[in-house]
Amino acid sequence: MEYIKQFPDLLKGKKILYVHGFASSGQSGTVTRLRTVFPNAKVMAPDLPIHPEEALSLLLKLCEEEKPHLIIGTSMGGMYTEQLRGFDRICVNPALEIAETMKEHGMTGTQQFQNPRQDGVQEFYVDKALVKEYREVSERRLNLRPLQGETPLTPEELDAFVCEEQKHVFGLFGDKDDLVDTFDMFHEVYPQATHFHGGHRMDDHSFMHAVVPVIRWIDDRQEKRQRPIVYIGIECLTGLTSLTPRPLQGERELKPLPSCQKAIKMLIEQYEVFFVAPPVEYAAIESWLAEYIGVPAWQHTIFTDRRDLLYGDYLISKKKEGDTMATLLEFGSDTFKTWDDVMEYFSHLGGQ
Image (cartoon, rainbow, N blue to C red; front, side, top):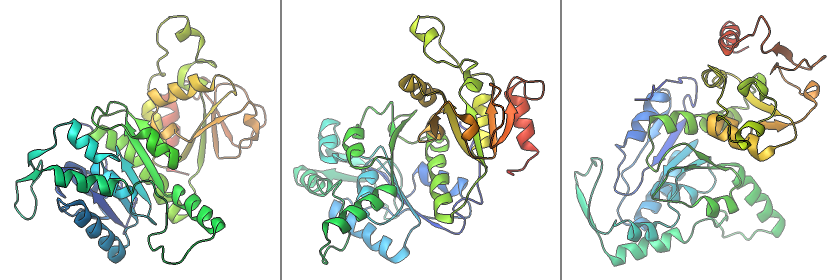
């Protein structure tokens, strides 16, 4: 089992609304993870009614009354979450075409709830009429409009609303999800969408390494928190300045250097980490970072030859940069020969 770590200062005193998936409940494993990892947050996880209109009405009422700071929805819950306008939201493997998913994967007829519910009900029945209800609700997806549209908006006001809404919605999609694949549909409307290593069901690994980093970014923005910035040269992760020659020539796969992944997991807990690469081989570099670093590198990669102009607190680089605007940690030197040396250095700083 993946090690679950607590972050008592993240989302401290805030409300999280979790929206569960099909045939699940508010007693799912993801709810347990949320309450464990964020012990000082209030996690709300209602059992959703089977009928989608009732479920959506319940969620809208709860949002109006509780004003959650963050909404997280998985699968069918991700479909509902996308429609809860006006809040910071994370949609994990959202089943945006839930009716088609139900038909294709045998989710009709008598169904068993996967987790206990407060009402004690253990099974339910899905017929054609219920599938139609789900289709009607899901077809309201990706329609960026204010919740209360009685006051018409000018085109300029609508554009501003859409841009603002897009900033508050994240989509996370498992690269091994064999049940739902709505990435392209989602990404056409919401630019903040990426893949993570994992399947359709959330587990400890995908939660800690894909969802928690995004939650940290959201909480930082809400709190206007500015963390010290650490830049990491791509060559410090691989030992090479180029990622393409060896893999393209059929030689051994280019693996990350020992302890670099562990160091990055440590650094992102207290610092804003960016990865710096030369302005060439974009696709190869982004693919390598997605494979070995994952979500922390998403939207945190800078392509430039002018590292001396990077404004921040620390620059970990194997190349001698001359004068820099950040404290230079020369990777491979006697002081920072390995990533274990880097971790030891930052462990003494305490996030400074």
